[in-house]
Amino acid sequence: MSEASDLMRMYLADPDQPFPPVELADDDGLIALGGDLSPERLLSAYSAGIFPWYNPGETIHWYSPDPRSILVPTDLRVSKSYRRAVAVADYAVTMDHAFADVMSHCAGPRAKEAGTWIGSDMLAAYQRLHELGHAHSVEIWRDGDLVGGLYGVARGRSFAGESMFSRARDTSKIALYWLCTQLAAWDFALIDCQVTTSHLASLGAIDLPRADYLHLHTQAAARPARPGPWQFEIPVPNSANHLPV
Image (tube, rainbow, N blue to C red):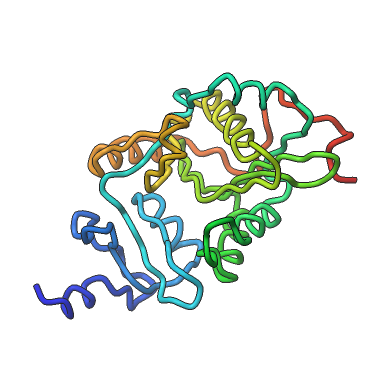
């Protein structure tokens, strides 16, 4: 097949056009181009194990990489120093309390990284998913300031982690700890980490062949959902002294 026909096959020209089979993704996992970030399109993508990933101003790129990085919530690797950071409890932790702020922090500049892949269109699209009860955030607060957090999208009992941030030491890891603890209590099967990194691997993330990931994800996504807004149902640090006034 020629490069031109490959691009035609990948391009989503119609709002109702389905994604190509993920087996047709290229070596980088790119499965489609174009389309939009409507709630319907995004939910269809996440249900199929596909996610958008592109730079602001570019055509939307949709990916389903092989292999796929996942973290089983009960398999989070907690070192002694990690456990101490969680146990200090000089913070409050909340869910779905400041979704837009978490996304904005995730979109901010990072050390050793130029630019961001979270543009204004993504901010608006995922805020809409949040309002519809599908996108969720975890927030870490210290003395009224938002110092860490993460966000992602839930389909059934599968959670796709999108991004995290820290404004103080270990605060994104603390957010992940409490997310994993709550998701385990809700019997979520996996957190989709999408693409492996050494940091995620150190926390217990593993790579699966795409077919194995999709089998696990499809089963989990078909289970009853927990529509938002989410709240912790396990005991968490929540001192009023650390929450914003």
